[in-house]
Image 1 (cartoon, rainbow, N blue to C red):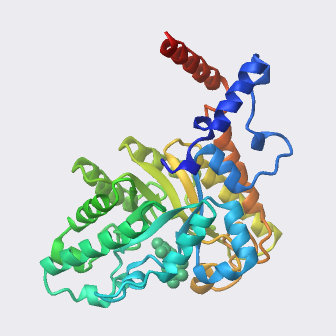
Image 2 (image 1 turned 120 degrees about the horizontal axis):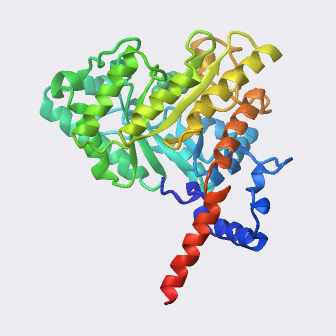
Length: 389
Ligand code: XIL
């Protein structure tokens, strides 16, 4: 990720200062730790993630930004935002000649004012129920292709510079099946519609990282195999795909992949040369109360550290951040408390678990900690000497 504030601190002036501190200390006993790793430090999720060079994000709704605690918590704890709905095709492009950018623009303005980056979600949600009726009524392949080009070019170009990664296609597979969604794009353009969408997005913003985002593929199973084959096929065909998004909508005890399975999935994509992000994490509980919150924290710890322990994992985005505003209330009913902050914006045990997982990633950043720092300094000193000669 080349967005400046997500760069590992070791490549920044602060990193150079740490390196100088290390040289001055001069002994392995005095290896500097990042301040967030020191005992008693109280860094936010954002401070830790930014220092470690990873994304920590939340889906947000522009209507909530007027709530002071919502806006303060979002800006303090996260370095990235996803528009929960406002960049989806039906919302941003409701009719052929009509784009409605204002709600998405409000989130972009908030992100820019607070030096945050954004994930773009999503250029095309493949579920036919999520495709506007006017698009589904396309008369022929030529027209549909022109609409797809216009849509992707217009949206990607508008948000270039703030959106660093796009979910080009969301949910290519039918829920609970291994088949592609049957939609107007499959009907008129064939399976190639997926590759075409990536090519159009890449041409519109060559610096954006392009993702295929999917649900229910967080552990090896038949659905994962189908998704993997789809992704591997795109890579083999030279399609500009850079990453895979694992949504991560967990339902405790029911849809609950384990850390070991998640690692296998991430490593499989890493072996294809791709990065992985968890893009919509939430953990739905069937009860609220101290015991449930501890179980939830355990699930957060297991899955978030499984991701963050692997270099190919580039970050985590929660689908919301406060139990006061979560789509789960509308889907499963209230009281399922899936997010790291409670309804009063107080951090829950799940928050502490996410924080520990991020601290684990920070501790593993070689430029900041351990002997790799000494090797880096020796290399830099030698390079400097060579330049002076
Ligand atoms: C959800 C939003 O959270 C809801 O507000 C909306 O009514 C429906 O969409 N997977 C996705 C997201 O990829 O886009 C969905 O977001 C949640 C499931």
